[in-house]
Image (cartoon, rainbow, N blue to C red; front, side, top):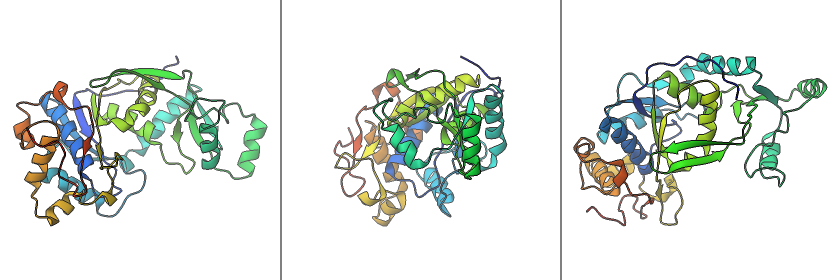
Length: 312
């Protein structure tokens, strides 16, 4: 494996990193609470990062931060925004490029989708369509003014991580995108660079992201960055067993306030969903133990807050 030198800072923090594309729903708030509990219960700092490289809705960031504070979460230091950190991402791409680990990809979104489902490659993996383009082929694409994304030239197809809740997990690695065709740094690159730069050594997030984590850990290893400790927690689902969404009823804090519930009552319900009495976040710290967390999703009814498994 080829490694690339890339500096990092002192570790010792957890984080929550929402995308400001809309209001947080109860599933987001529950994951944020868990990230806060994991960090605070282990004497780590808890940092807030806004991942605003994609779609941003006006006012969403302020509402998200206000909702997190309203249910009793706090964080250390200023809020970091990815849009202010573009030089860091470019520096990582430059280092990988200098090591011969980057290539241009001219595939359209449709071509990528078709390639990712083709029978000749691993399901969902990019099969390296543009990996071996000749200089003439690249020149032809450039002449057509087709924008080029930048992909990692991976040398492995799998990578193993250790998750606090799931144990050892070996997942797929492909030639992941580092920079999109429009010049925007890709999520998998940005999150790896940011976690290392902020000294984040504990990442708690939804278990829907578990399958993408080996890609990130592999990329961190190439950049000689520390791989965080991971804990992928169960999601909140609707009664149909589908990941919670705005259409599922009163699922945001604002919705709950409109129904007459207080932020403290919402926080208490989140505590109940974790198998604890209806406590505030700060009260939960004394008894919080990751090993006792339920591994099944929290199922909400159409009212968006009442849970099938009531408080103990």
